[in-house]
Length: 541
Image 1: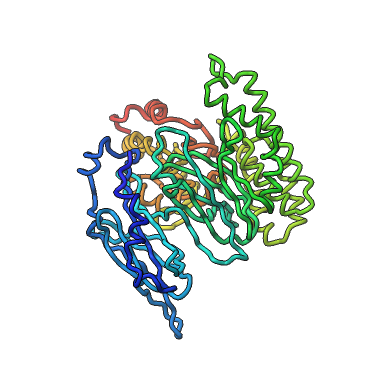
Image 2: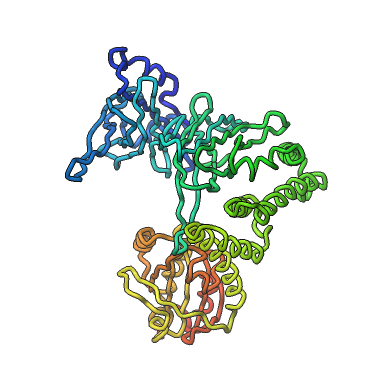
């Protein structure tokens, strides 16, 4: 449920500013509104939302600022405009002489400051629009642009994605519909870098525009969501000077969403097959069948008719993307096709050895900088995945676990050898802050540790796929009393690969010689093992 303080009236705000105040070519106008939403941890009625209001936004100060640098290279913050919400909306007007990157900030004495960056373009015909999303629940409040998210005016490096989206689901509130454009790249240390090109709420006509700089052709992800619920996910190829349009295909029964471009690599690598009648008819049939419920038999298995359409659409995707990845004259198009295939096709469709061979060939054809950033890290993650799978199979009962040296909370290296020096039974517990079962296991593990740690039992927890800050915060919250260590990287990082950690939680119960006694043992099973070895927890050693 969503309560919008105001949507209608934004244009009126702009028009209410007198002619004498807007006739300057240097004038800019920013309008804002408050949209109140209930997320998964919210309440059930408008009265509940009103009663649980955390902040009185009428008391908040809204400012627009930007940084300027003087002749000595010193930076200072200059305020361009300020104001307050009145009846859930605010109008901010000021003067600038050129397009300027500025910060919209909302400061409330009861809340930490919210802020968002906006590219302000002067001129009385340009109205910049934002919404303060006042979430009632666990999701943090945020500032999001409405209608258009522009982060550049450089025509030589700009790409744009625009369109109209009208949800077909009846339970969707249009006030929270947003479009988010991102791309992914891995750093040398195998950590993920998410490139954020912009997020924008759809306007009253369900339209949106995102304009941003792109340094080279890339595969980007376009998501349309209602709050935290993703409705559409499409992959596009962005590059300078290319415009991509998102729309429903009204010529087919399902009206599925398609992203198209009149030119560029997107048109070549995607539109060349996804707009053809053969693919459209096959894909349309699968969507219609899914919506009507005719895609499944009574036992839940897919119908033969559905699978025929699905296989046809899948084969067209696979054939075209593989052909581009292996035969395109431009090696960058080969890379883009391979990146698209790994995003669009189900995992395992392309054989991993085949992918590695393609990456190895691209490493000889592409510029060394692109190879370093986009070829080598991707290849390394595939080889890490294969090695992790191999290690998971090899690390069975009786095998020795690999040695490690990882940092504790003080940054001191702790090795497995140190831990096993005076302990006869050690539980190695891999976890992450997003893993609910991992966190739930802390309570019974702490009880077992309290009962048996003085009898030769030890626990070492290793946090993976978690930042150091988050790891320390959660560890301190639960007051973990044992060796609590942090491993860099995600589930394809060095320690996770060495231990064959394919899922979380993963646990190893080992002896003092590093031999595995039990694998993926749960707290209740561990309790029985400890009782059998040491006796009842209440008895003396």
